[in-house]
Image 1 (cartoon, helix red, strand yellow):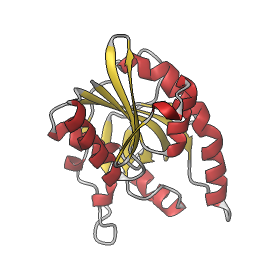
Image 2 (cartoon, rainbow, N blue to C red):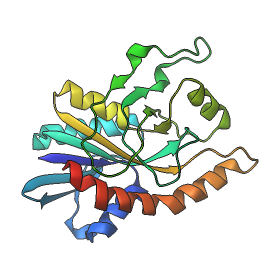
Image 3 (cartoon, rainbow, N blue to C red):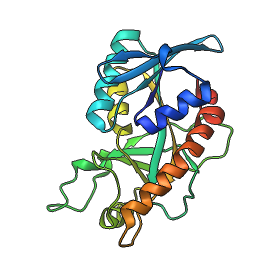
Image 4 (tube, rainbow, N blue to C red):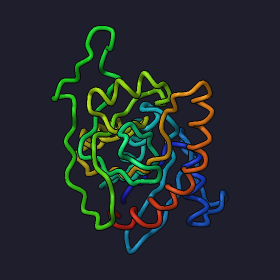
Length: 218
């Protein structure tokens, strides 16, 4: 069986709408809901983990143990750091890092050994690559964006690194497909503006990920 993780409720709702999945068909587990189906002869379980790395890691281990997953595919949105990324671009990262490890008051350097190198994606559709960083807090502060840019991180999310580590520890494969939904705003009302952009772009980019990109890696 293949697991497909979505973290946020907003992302999950798009999945339900795209596949016309009724709430009646969802099953509950300690971290949210999941939905089992078959696609092109493959057994799939879609599951919502909830935000942040602990929920993502714990829910993934739960699914691995319950369904003996052979692979996990992480789909969802992420926040742009790289100026060359446009909203609704699809990011297939070539490296990933948990940048919460860095104690910024003591060191502004990230050691190369902290990165996980990811294999080249076998996807025929257009995408951007780069370094995806995971953190337990959303990227909304301008000072955090400038820090990430200074160390070469291109985008940020709140779950992918933790899920990758769980998959590696269980010796199973994983893929990451992320859509650029928002970026921090350097303005007085920056957070509210960023949230509006996120809410506008999330249904668009998630539909693109689910309908076009996900079938290529299932």
